[in-house]
Length: 143
Image 1 (cartoon, rainbow, N blue to C red):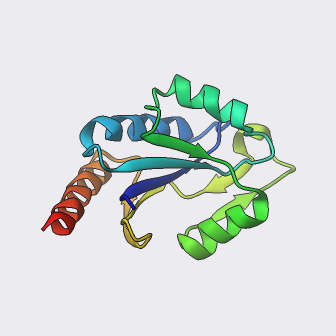
Image 2 (image 1 turned 120 degrees about the vertical axis):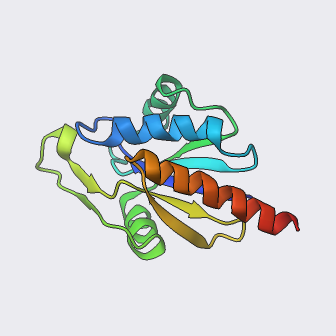
């Protein structure tokens, strides 16, 4: 029943995930309190609830505001590929730090579960656009 922002990370990532998580942490302070954040792991075999809880703490996730979600591989692929229309690939033979290849887009989802926009999760301009659109979405729904 609330708008939210989805992102995709994995805790052993040797690429963009630390920056994506740092940017999600920045969004906590910039977005209205009504907007929730959800980071989905794309390495469900390693990222257990305990591993995600430690990662969330390291990145300053506010309890009740920024959530970390783990799905089994099949529902994960269905959600990311079919639901969000974004790529994700897990190479079990690759080194752990590069095992998952995934989008760095952040996704704004409205209170009804509809995708409202895709944003560059690594660029300050992408974060600015996301904040602007989330505020507009809340204003539109409050009228």
